View 1 (cartoon, helix red, strand yellow):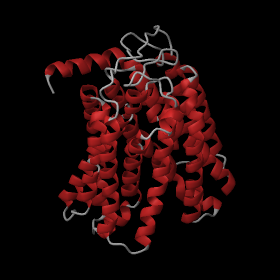
View 2: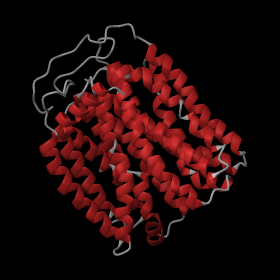
View 3: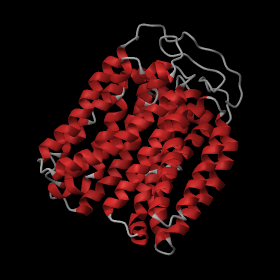
Length: 423
């Protein structure tokens, strides 16, 4: 990277740090609705409610899939409500979800608790920051999404440590109550102070919009029923399917490869560090070449860690696998997220992204079950890797042709100026 680009990046962060921090905090506090955080309390929950692993898994899947359906309709609110207002509503909704979860006393309540957490946390908080970053910035859209995305690895490092430390001295329900307080105390002031529009934000808000590459403002219905949707959907489905499959069945893979669990766990720090690098590199590449050029490539490259998994025969290869996985997986979200704004404009961006988010959640529910059934059927490792590796390769190829459609049409048509207000 040239010194000029480095100076540009520093200037961008320095001038836009308030809104970038707001996006990062939204990503960070999506963690109460993420699998990695909820699963930390699974033993206590199953013990209190007398649930088996299968019972808890079915309840979790039902809540997750229900939230995916709901966000298709709820996600469109970011298209019609000002950012500060919708952010406060989502934050209060997440606080309600965490508070409700601390009170669950039956399987039915647990199902509703999972549904609320997945909808408000993993769903709306993630949907909100990605849409906001894509709307507020055009020239630096990739970098903005990449920086905000760092809230996820930060939460993956800090939130488990926070939970496990408190589990040693208090009941799990109290931890969820403390989480509720943290959400309200940190996120409400952050929203009020950091969500406003500032100079240097060249993107659009709710009232000012930018057309897609073909000069049109696509509606969700037009996107879904246009042939290109079938080619582009894989760019969302494949990363979720492959990465969830690799993580969900990782203990099985480690045992199959005869890798001791402490050695396997040592790879997570490498994964986290390189996922941050991958996100930042991906964001810079998007700003230089556009998401429609980079996204199909990075999705296709997800087949590489799948291939490396089958080659693990030493501690060094464990770290190579995790490093490669983190670098590529870290770049996926920042390069795929801006595609929808580039192709379809920002007027209906919230609704369009809500559909894509729902596809991602469905894929994350399908992968553990599908790969699990293959494992139960006794299929060899090569067959499992073939499935998980073929999905991103096919998705990347189809996505490339989908992104090429309409490429020659002027990309600046339909742009509208916007007032310097809180949108």
